[in-house]
Image (cartoon, rainbow, N blue to C red; front, side):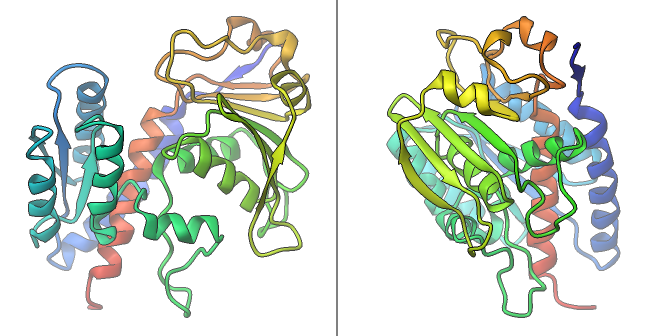
Length: 306
């Protein structure tokens, strides 16, 4: 078997077309959209990501204002963006301070401008599997843009059932890395869609039980190890930000698995393409498209009816 390599760019292009149409609709109502990005490094991965983000936002008609700040000034810069009525969204490029400080900055973002979907207001809705903000179910909850991009790529790879409420029912997934930015919310989103998820991290293993027959997923301690988790997984998603990570190999995989690489440094040995059905080598282009879609949803929720 030779894996199909799924390029995220065409998938992202389809979502950008829809976002572009929505941006034009809002512009016709007199509402142009603007995102402020805050960054503390002029070089490195964050700066590269910001350049791609600028290209992606501006391609769909969204103004992108990247502001260089320092660790000591980041809070004030964020407060200014939060209170500026001409700013519709805020994007933080880490690290801005340190790990603890960056976590606090995420909490300072106005949830109504949180295009990344990382504020605890949105996190609570995600982990409770509450998909709408209002009782009338007219305003959708915002989801973290990178995990959301992964779900859209799995759908593009053909991984879904006919059940709208549980499109991943019967799927077993393995997510390597349980960070608050990608791994943990991704595991929850997969489980909310019906998958059983083995979450592996340096601190140990957890299993996210699917939200089938219950409102939201459940999490339990697990003693499953890497070998057993990978062997059972229909889907393997890895997001370990380290060159020292032991790459996932073909001999660890279930035949026909779908593999998604979310890491800055590759997490998969080239041999996986001999055993996987689909291999997704990167997610970035679709992450930016999902952030732009989140922005449109946030702006539309704040836009008075015409």
